[in-house]
Structures are given as structure tokens and as C-alpha cells.
Image (cartoon, rainbow, N blue to C red; front, side, top):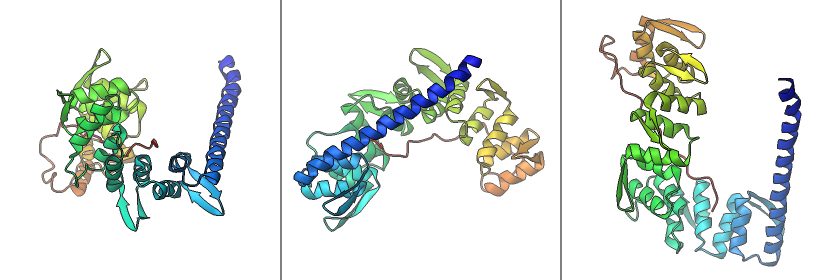
Length: 322
């Protein structure tokens, strides 16, 4: 123990040194692209690179933030697909070419102008709902992304949430999509939860039960109320070497989301419990369920539900600039 304590300052110093080097490299790159643009202000590619670094420079008396860098890139070259994608990642742009482009429109423009179709742009377009103008559904966008790059875990995940699809002519159901996603990214709690909802499955040659999937999800994100609920539904489990009963799981779920009517309902059926330092008996829990969801809990004496919560989706576009 004494040895590990003595090593802590070294670890902290190492992290600080890494951060300092990273910041220095970022500053050097910004200076490099700034110097290029001083002499070649029409270099669209350099504006994109500067924007990907966060912008935040003054050039010829004008300040350019990240968005302005991408806009400047498009003013110099309207066919710069990377600039269109990165503006979509930022949420869209209101005033370019006297038009407003939302996220969806930016990603569609990126795909229209770019000769080499980019998998991450197709992924982003799928996440924001697909390309309505050109008739690409969300599923088709995720399938297109995976045909271009089958290593995109988020694309497999989202394709699974939508029920699965075809990639390179092969059919993948939702479970196989989640298994593919986890083979590429073991650190995604949402995917573990979704595989658990489907009963578990094989990941990297190892067969994992539903319970193990929920436990892995909570080890990665211990504040996800719906996963605590799901673990409670199947009788509880062990998270970070600590055992949690059904009651304890529903209590944890409500600790992080007190609006979860199903958790109140099941906690009530188990006799009640403690939520955020307050004691609720069985009747109080059931009444809370009815109050929060009167349409589904008209009769508090109905048989208990056993379904897991709905699947989690990847709602954020890829933050990686192209």
C-alpha cells in the first residue's frame, strides 16, 4: 500500500506532463495553419484543419472561432465536404450563402459534394434521422456507413436499435449488431444494456448472460437508472463486487430518476423501500406509479410487469472532425 501511495505523485505528474505536451502541440499546429492562411487565405483545407483544432485565432484583424473557420472554408470552396460535416457536428449553420442549414442539411451537403463517400458522415446523417430529401432512411444510412467502414461500433449499435439490417448482402439481426458493436467497443454501456435486453449473447468468443450484460453496463455507467431497473427485473446482481437485491436495484434506479414509474411500481410490489433518504411503504410506491403514469397504472393491483426498459440509442453525432 505504501508503495502505491508513493507512486501517486509520479502518476499525477505524468498526466500533467502529457496534458502540457498536448496543449503545446495544439498551439504549434494552430500557429502552423495560421501562418499558412496569412499567406494563402484561400486555402480551404487549412481553414478546416484550424477549425478542427477549435479555431480561436485572430487573422488580419478578424477573429475566427471554430464555426467561422468552417464557414470560411466553404466560402473559399463550397465543395469542401469536411467543412460541411463539421458544421453539422456543431449543430448546423444559420448564415452561409444566405441560407440556413440544419444538421441534417449539412451532412447531406457533405455527401453531395464529396466524391469519396465518408462512413462517418453517413453515420451522422443516420443519427439525425436520415436524408429525407434524397430518401435515405436511418437504416439505409447506417448500412451505407458500415459498407464503407465495418469497424464503426456506433453504426452497428444504431443499426441494432433499429432492428438490424443488411451489410454487404448479409443479414444481421439486432442481437448480432450489438455483438458486432461490442467486439469493436467494450466500453459502451448503452450497447451492453441493449444486448442484455435481448437476453445476452456471445462477445469475442465468450457467451454472456443477460445479467452479466447489465452488470457490465453498470460498471461502466453506474448512474443509468434504466439499467438498474433492468437488473432489478431479472432479480438483481453484483456490480463492482457489491451485491444488489431486486429492491436495492429499484431503489438505485429511483435514486437517479425519481420519475421512473415502473421502478416505483415494482418497489411497491416488493413492499416499498428507501429512496433518496426517504422511506416509502408499499402503498406510497404504488401511488407514485399511478401519479406518474396514470394511463398504464389504472389498477395498482394488476400483475407485475417483467419487461425491460426500451433500448438506449446513440443520439449524439460523431464529434470527431474529419
